Image (cartoon, rainbow, N blue to C red; front, side, top):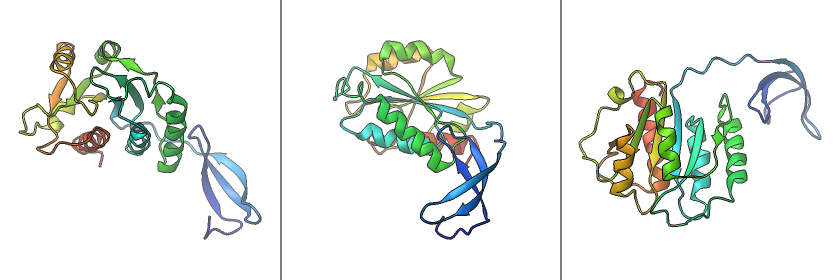
Length: 212
């Protein structure tokens, strides 16, 4: 708005991610606009990516929600896994995560505000996995030879990315996930932090799907 002038048209996005074409009526002492029309939004054609993030310590989940929303994640599943260090500390933070998702969606021009689900345990997450075309779990124990992500996501319309906590996922958790169709993969030789791994995986998947 710093370079806008009275009479110019601008796009305004509300808290539901709806977009409106508006004309500027005034700039001082505050910006006033008149809604002209609601803009038709294009149909969602991107690969629908959900992120199951095992709860990290402190406020790191805030960063994950904000940045993954910018990358187009449509749903967050906070997970209480076996080795979560900050046990249960995320259960009272849902409202803040939802506010962060809403703000990040508005800032990044997302077509919709991502859903932030209630915290689930590992068994609850396993029950949700069959609802996705692909379930991908970056895992530090997976073979470091890169798997062809384009082949993994080819033909999929929905992908669930599962990220372990600072303590990592246990062999038992991985085996249970593989039993319902999840696939593990390596993100390379470097060990990434829990709050970084999901962002790297989502970016790589978007690239493999031809959306970057």
